[in-house]
Length: 528
Ligand code: G4P
Image (cartoon, rainbow, N blue to C red; front, side, top):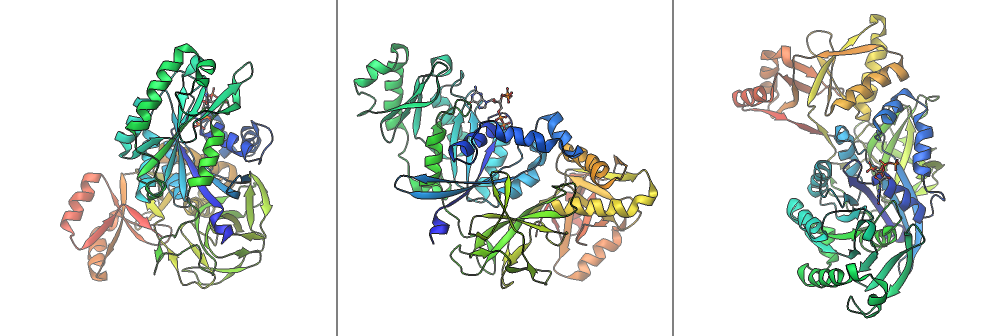
């Protein structure tokens, strides 16, 4: 039971540049997982050099791959806590992969730049969290820089996200005037130290914001304002309610500077104290509780060619129940044969370690040769299927033009692999031999071409396709589906799993056709 209640599996969501990478690094540093700040980036850079695919990351300065980092830490009054931090690609083009990663977490930290507030990508990611009632702790970053008024930021979160907000800490001044943070719950003052005013140096216990001690510590410029603001904040916002937070109705807000390592400790403590341990996961025939004895889990990500010398791929499985032991046999639902998991991998801060045991909330990397797919359920008894990992309707469709026709087989394999990883979707038209790939964002097209070339040695180009979007079609009566596909054969294709897909010239056409064929269902997402 302890191994369930001490797990915190979470992701950081933010708009690019808000400070996610810096915060990740500092969380790992404070968690004792790495000893030198900068290591996350340094390791990232070393890894990037390894394949052409990674070059895109480098050129664009974005993170394409999502990884898992595990670290442990002791807390007074709570004991040891194991954190599983799932990194989500920050660029909006990678929304699909990011969405799936969010299906595997129990809570999220939302990082906001104090000067920018809620930005488009934060908002989109937040919506995904809301769909799944993922509770959110907000970290307002970069308080060492000039930013917006604290009240304005809090009101924006409340209004744009329709959440109750409750400030847990309060910054005293911003930018060059920044003098520390006041902890509203404990009345502690957290003060920066040193010539460059870095780090959370001193902690001073006060009796409240009116404590005369503050007169000597905080400059006259900030003092009156801080006192007034804190008083207003204490009456103006609801008290922190752990239940409301866990339901996803309230977000506690922390202020800090990831760069200057300020306020990061309070954030980790909040995760340990409030963030939910593994929750029941939606499944058929019924939701799976983490306390269930048998091992169950689902694959939320597959990554091929992590190591260019090995052709295998790693399926990332979130363990949902039971105690996983190395060598255990698990059955992927839907394709029958149990597989023995001899070399599972745990991710201790990017160093891969062989896992002997894992508990609900943990992420296990399972090397395989393509048997495991995104959305697969793995279980001891093969009697459940996790639901809710969607495939999204692609917004960009392209024809793949092969430069060397003798490479057809390799191309098909590459497209299948990448569809399986969720990098792109692939559609095989019923008529004609031009395969079509679909993506949610433009950047995925570049990733596709550069990986085709680097990993599969296939030179290919992309051409405009006569279609703009795709819908998975189904009908209660197979005869209705057949009637529809017979009449629309030139627009029909199969996805990688052989499911029928209708390729449409426009969103308008989808609506038009859907009206005409009332008995056929047109789905923009497909759950596996
Ligand atoms: P991201 O992963 O969300 O995209 O953001 P990242 O951590 O890469 O941070 C984006 C930029 O913001 C970086 O600067 C980083 O140093 C800076 N930054 C992050 N946290 C803070 C903070 O608390 N205070 C201040 N002042 N800056 C912060 P850069 O110049 O783009 O990159 P770099 O050259 O420093 O690596």
